[in-house]
Length: 213
Image (cartoon, rainbow, N blue to C red):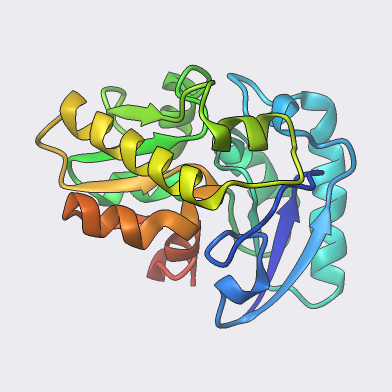
């Protein structure tokens, strides 16, 4: 498998475990940045429709370079799963949220819980009452992503993702697993699973799901 990743137009750090770091994968991986595809234009209740064409073009560029699977660096793009799947001639997995139908009693951790809503869950085939929690606007990791900062406080970021996970469990104590909508949460996945005692699935894990092979 040669994986192609449609990347947002960002500069913030991508640690191992993040989809934007090639060290996160055991397979060959290639990247194509989509110009002007900012977090603000895509991590929203509805992605900016003017960017759909550039995403399709970027996907076709990756396919022309030998990629036989396509994914994205933003879980909110689950809203374009159907559109990108029809436009591109290889399997497409836009978001780890697509794991939700196969994970009973799962909860979601997201970059922005105010922006991820019923439409995203419906596009993923998930239950409308799926518990959702995430970063707070004052969190350093939220600001790094939202403001596209070139610096990252790793210790604070890890603590903030763990705190979000604990808030999610307080919201719904019966949760049996967690899905990380945000592809930037991957570096903290193992620490989160250890701290909460639950399986945690991000985009890297979703891409190894047999349904995507």
